[in-house]
Amino acid sequence: MRTEEPLVSVIVPVYNEEKTLQELLERLRRAPFRKEIIVVDDGSTDKTPEILAEQQDIVAIRHERNRGKGAAIRTGLSYATGEIVIIQDADLEYDPNEIPKVIEPIVRGEAQVVYGSRLMRGLPKEMPFLNKVANLILRWCVRLLYRYPLTDEATCYKAFRTDLLRSFNLRCKRFEFCPEVTAKTLKRGIRIHEVELSNYRPRTKRGGKKVRWIDGLEAIWTLIRYRFFD
Image (cartoon, rainbow, N blue to C red; front, side, top):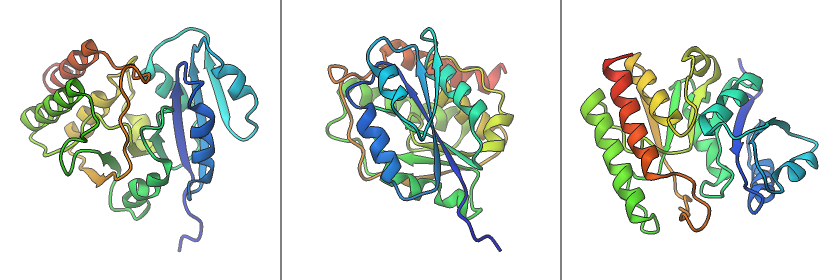
């Protein structure tokens, strides 16, 4: 009988997040689950490296040049020692206190993959219009291409059994991490369990959001590519 809760590897890809990084790390530390924090600095040119150098209880890795979020996640995954992996952005859109409910189906043995959905009760009012459109298009692409009723394909909070995520042999470089893991999960016939997020707070491009319209096109192409050509 299991007596100790599983170790969760939280991979935090960061690029020029000096304004929010320290607070995010403090929130992660306080969140009620057993964790290791793996931060991958993807070539930041602000004070992010200095902030990370002051942290004694995290695994900090640096890319000397900016390679993209997907590349940072792949680097972080190579350092993960936990049974479960979850992705955490550093911009405070997502609340680490919601991680326990995201990983709970995996802990209970009921799922191998869990997404924290922002969209179960509709689109967040504060979400920029173009982001709303992109999220709806990606959701319907998954439903049309993979016949799966996913509500939120582009959510950051994606949790996996670590061995499963490693078996995907990820190729992503930028923001195509999300469609790549979605496609590879569903093509294997693995169910994606979703839980509702309550504390999601979207930020705008002015607030530092880095996703561009071209990243949405790349996400759509990634879903198509892995469905038909790969």
